[in-house]
Length: 492
Image 1 (cartoon, rainbow, N blue to C red):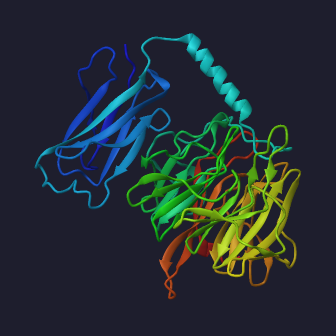
Image 2: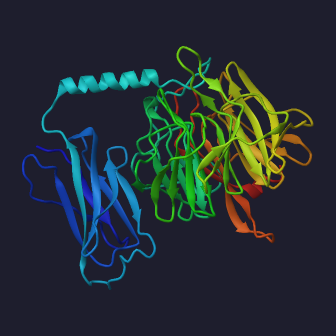
Image 3: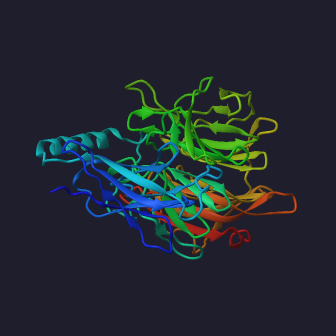
């Protein structure tokens, strides 16, 4: 007997989900399922599965299509055992809502690939061996005396639409699976996008892209269409959103022994990926930083591969990507440049880019550098008083036009959970203790300052702090989401 999950679509929260019915097919045909619904096409369709996925192979999937009479059939997403639901959103002006309610029908259909016909123990043994080989080759870049997180306790729920903590104290499990080395970026005042990462048994996350709706505090797994290839699973990459072009730029990262220097663009208006054939040279980089300034991407540092048996190296170079001409170039940089490093943080305040910490085996840094993007000049910041302890794989986020915050990280021996605020006017670090911040040590997490309302200068001031994921380097990956008001932190 075939073991196939039940498949549903939800088009109206006031009505029950509609189950897709299996269509007649031959014994060698892939199973087809379909549900006919009444026009107009809703602005959102939630597609999900319930039940047993054991009858499908590890890479089994259900491809979902939308068919409206008189229009081309459109693929709207894919269900897998790791991502068992997704939310499709209709683009504005696509014409799907031209009909009146009850005027005509449209169809949501699925084709299931990877159905297991018979039990194959030999193939299963080969699969386990292959997984073991992947685990062995997936070591941390910039090899040194560093413990790489390995999951012992599974946390979070896979493939679910999940509520997260709205505000205040504590944390809760979130929709995405536990991971570190992912990328997080805000798209607008209500939306945050999560891309990639590495989690359970050091495997790369197949539920690779999620959307957080800040308005109702809910995570949704999402997919996008593609003109060509989509970003391959990876860790240590960056994702930056440009509000002018409404695009997310994903750059670099690594996967096992594969390194990336590719640029992928996600058009958030059309919700479509595009791979860039960029001119100019930039090396494959992972655990670098990427900042958007005046429409260009400023990439600093990171770890890169060297020919075997040489150890991986760290970069001290600054590269700029010009999206308009799709070209990489290296600017002339003056001043006292930081030593080569990876896993550092970079925080942009107006035109000043503050680079803190990082790692280049066997050294872990606690220095602070300032890059003036107007003058293109680096300088070492002379800090008044003491600085935070050396660390890497932490994150930094602005609190105001003259202060930023760092939290956690890894010091070469253990994960950290301390928090510090730097004031750019007084040039002093202040230790912050706040009961809404994560108390568990973590590295490789993501932290963002989320925009609030505009001020008198027509700028968006940071309103909330968002922290997601990370690992403790002792076997635990986190899938919690923490949100707290920045106004509670500015007085420290």
